[in-house]
Image (cartoon, rainbow, N blue to C red; front, side, top):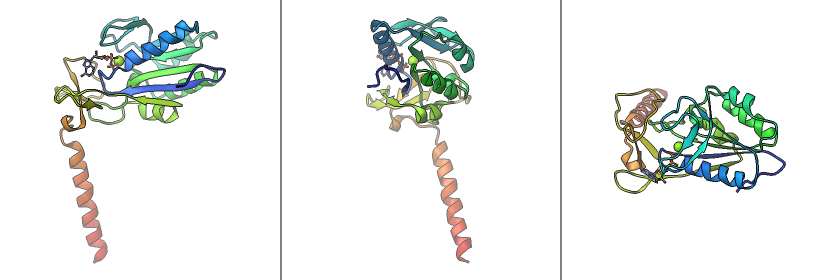
Length: 208
Ligand code: ADP
Ligand code: MG
């Protein structure tokens, strides 16, 4: 487990909705506070499901947080004395978030990020693919599938009519699902079928 020292670090806690990402983020941040390290917590202002100035888990743990609209704002708001920066729902930030967290880590700060690795279609969510690549430590955690009780890595959107990537909601809109019960409307199968057919017809032409 990465601990704070003189050099900074980037930790990412990822997984589907309800997997305990926020609980884990709060656990790490509260331990840092017990160690008397100066901690600052940020969240995207778009996510005001529970509270404007608190990060709250589905199990009602909470910690106070500063809402921000852009990733650059985080850089502007971190004090020189801060040792640990936590960011919840990091998938909602713009692409500059990778540069921002790299800069904070270079300043010797321990950066702890929590966010959805995949969107409701099972694709990398916003800047998450980059963040996972540049992290020193990644913990991918699972929820419980609402259909069968197996370990769940996917977030299932109950109403497929909504196709936008960002649609803030809760159990009204989303469920944790295992791979078998997260049918992303057959899109991957269609794409794969296209490439199989394409390659088959290409090899036929090449053989002529
Ligand atoms: P996340 O930030 O990943 O959405 P939270 O940390 O807010 O998750 O909440 C995790 C908590 O959600 C669990 O400890 C549990 O009490 C509750 N929970 C509700 N639905 C589920 C589920 N399907 N699988 C696992 N935990 C669930
Ligand atoms: Mg959360």
